[in-house]
Length: 87
Image (cartoon, rainbow, N blue to C red):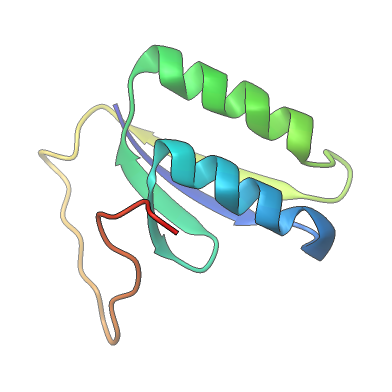
């Protein structure tokens, strides 16, 4: 599956969410990740995110797409991130 993850996390936990997300997906820009991920890895990623975030304060939105084949992507302005998940 192809997922797009956007989040709004309190500052004290944002670095942990960033690091965890880079283990599974590609960084696109501040607080946005995307990429192909298996069902098993997706479940593991979500479980790990739930352990990091505070459900009363933080927000994570995950868009699930069956494939990126029928989607399009347009960047207006500076393109940040890329296909590298190296810090």
